[in-house]
Length: 266
Length: 361
Image 1 (spheres, rainbow over the protein chains, first blue to last red):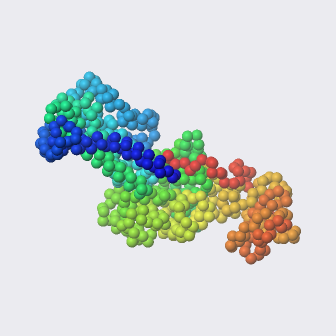
Image 2 (spheres, chains in turn orange, green):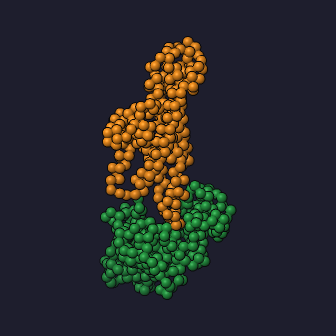
């Protein structure tokens, strides 16, 4: 379809405007992290690396970073194991209630975080009588991290078909051997992509985290929220925000690259 | 030719039935296959032949009936505990493994050491003349090479019977003919039972000691290639194995002077211009002449109301496109007319609408 010159310019301008609306504020945060002003005045009166240095010596921020990584890694691992198991169950076996289970597994990604957060908070404290700790955050994050792993693995299993598994079984391999030598090697890149997305989801999550985290523990997003309005912390918060963006975006970018290259390969 | 009656039974199916929902893909099949036999299951798509193979391999569980392998009831035994191996239609070579590792796979899962299994796998690859391709990935091979790797992978574990699911279906004609010869030689040298699923009647006739013709989940006829070709029992077999002219009750009465359903092979009909001919004769008009190289196929509209196919060998009476509309006389010997069971099924192969070859999913 050919477009007229005017249409091209108009559509280009709208696209530019929308993208600017999304990314200019992020750029401002990046610039502010180098600003000499403590109150985020615009335009910045001057530039300095002071805040980056301070941020990396800020014990609270570093601890929050470590907590976030721990939470994201742990919930990703849980999601990888459970997500793989459930997708094999749903793709390879027939059983009563299969469609219902499938829906229930995907649902957490669509549920409003605040609902999930309140519900889990309630369940942990009043029903299970658990103390809110980093563990409860990990469990809460795993509920929606499973979804990305599940979707990736399910699609891969569907595309693989059952032929390879049948061939393996035909040649004398039992269920576990077949999984280890045939199914898993073919799932690897799907697991990697799903795991990266899960990590990114968990790393910048704040709503569910707020309701499931114990006192005294902070993930990076929570730390930012708590420090945003403290005097003199604004530039350090900007630095941490930039770090948060970078750590969340890289996995998404890699996951997309994997998905893209596999599509063109087939 | 293997005499299947004097040999021990390798595979026995009794009242084997497999339903998918309401449809019976396999409908009460009884069958005995002898040791060392090259046995083919021939039929159109959806006739149940592949499902029978999958039931023998253990990928499907029968709804009822039993499967016995070498005297042992294996109906509920998992595929990995059965002494048979399969060559899959699409080969199912593991894409993440080298050709050598693919062939060595069955030995690996049996706990054979790396050195021994690689040596055995190399021997197997040598037998199919692919020794130089051991380190390649399956995707780097041609269709015919993949097919031979699949054969090597399935035979290196020394199965007592080999199941082949349309193994040549994806290959072009020349390669197919070449691999048919190789398959036959392999079967002779291994001396084990081959069960070969195909929809290609010519392939089945060429390779098999015996053939079971499948239709609608049942065995329509079981016999040697010659028996099936020369004495088909039903219109279905008559037209699926080779081509046949089928005369229904009314046409039989008009042409042969007796009732019933009959078939007549196109190459058994002579054609002469005008009305001089011996034997049973029927006048008609040439509708189409198709040149086939070694012979010519001529469609004739008989005055009795039936269109027949005549296969005239090259050299005798030559007909060409110009003869369309010419008056001719078809003639044949009564001994060449085969009496069939009255049709329980339509005389032509079922249309593509009849259920797809059922798989587990």
